[in-house]
Image 1 (cartoon, rainbow, N blue to C red):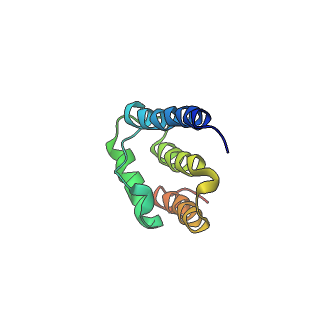
Image 2: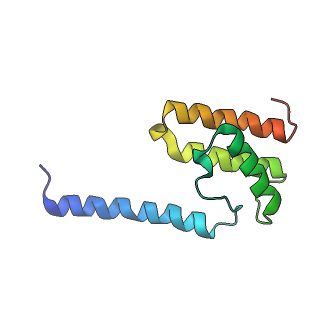
Length: 106
């Protein structure tokens, strides 16, 4: 069993990374997303991303489509292995929804 001091050190190492993610979300020069957008259905995610990217003046991609797709990919990549299979399928389906909304070929 690890000592208490070792566990406290490990906890301190993990904590800053969570704050870093929050700081990036709040201060980055990326588009503003509504809270809980990625927990909705695939159709609602695609529509919400399009609505957000159309309203935002802080997009990073060359096109609105690129910005919306990059935000979706960022979320999927940040979740990594902890993302459940059903959630991954729903998010991947929302990529197809974005392509359809923006009239892009699959």
